[in-house]
Image (cartoon, rainbow, N blue to C red):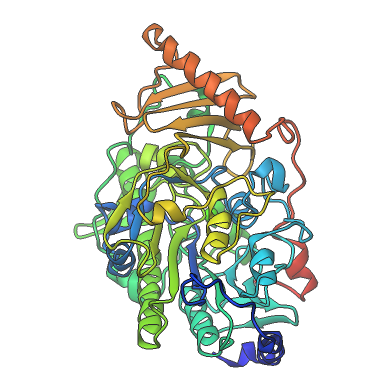
Length: 525
Ligand SMILES: [Ca+2]
């Protein structure tokens, strides 16, 4: 696995040279001046409710649980725009979409300041491996090797400054192999900032054979809201096209085209959304429709999704073991998260985008020996814009002035700053987008959520304490008008504080994250 990274070795040797210069003397009362390494592991679309440390009812993730047991579990960490590229841009810049220029699937301008650039300038060795999905080539990284666009699960191609190379194997294994390869040859006298980004468990949810077989016959418990009838809600839920019952394609469901289908018609067949499916049962072949088909689709979806998650868990375990076996455990902050949450059949949905809990909630687990108290939890509201200032704080740097988030280090330490945020602002733009999900913005507090679908002029209000599943829209309830008024005022305050002047309300930059860079490198996928 080392061969594709050979080109980095020369660069790594050169980069060691500046470190030979005398370092500034630490202050007399400073702790030993060894800045911690940062291993940031992020998966794609990994919902917290499929991690057993978060109380999953549907799977076990012992390696991720290990981070939680040895560190702190954040229970209220949220994406501010719950799709891939925008969340990644926010994580790197510490800014909301309307300021970092990535409200949808558009390219991140590589000239923008990012936390990688700040850490690199401060002497960290910065590395980006895996799924990037920001269109432009990574900037501010000493080394990078990334999947083109979404990448593929099996025998994936990765590319770097020199071009595209294909690897044999399963993408989650390959990504961890690359991370371990880097760790083995990391610069000896610099701390590292390693972003290790999994493609999994993103659609089309293609597990490796080991875990596909393990989950093939599992019966996964259904979520209570799988048959949500959307009564009382705004039009958005009824209009969206991310429903388990209606919108999973034959490709998603891993159905095989008839053997006699002409090759030219295979794509159309696979992309169709079936309204009946013939399955093998103990009693013979049976055609499923209606609710039986709905239940079957849920099982097929979750079996594959959870099998993809299992490979992530295994590989996180490999990374943790490697750190421990090689003396890096104590001086490496390990973070596990996902670019957003995901619906696992909740509200009959299978994507994200909506401001509902399963979509916006990000798993966020932090192990920092000697700083994070093992086995603790943190309920304060964290957002993805906080990650960049957190990395800077870990590195001993003040947050960069352009960043809108706030360092989570006090929360990692178990402190409760009196002035910590008690609400956060959310905004989603990609309408109609891939799943016809209506644009909206809103505010969430510890107890309530107010959502405004601005193009439809429709509102939803949920009492999260009384209705955690968000089934009862109480916006029109006369008894709630005082709450509505307060939340509207808070929403306006946050919108202003975050400098959202509706910059992208009517028009967003054109998409471009899946195109130019890989194409320029000589083909993708
Ligand atoms: Ca994602």
